[in-house]
Image (tube, rainbow, N blue to C red; front, side):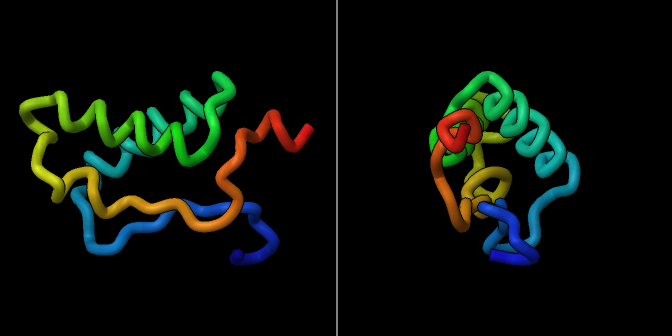
Length: 76
């Protein structure tokens, strides 16, 4: 993983900047509440599916997690 980071979120294609900001803000909110990294991203993607303006996979399906998937708190 790059520069010693335990994990990183990347995209498989160019994504709308506003949608990216929404994904990242919600992702970090979930991490702070103790969710694992993969589960946090999954829940954000499911939330986007429930929104009429973000349902299309263009807005959420490109995001993937690379690296350690565990909760940050698990690393203790």
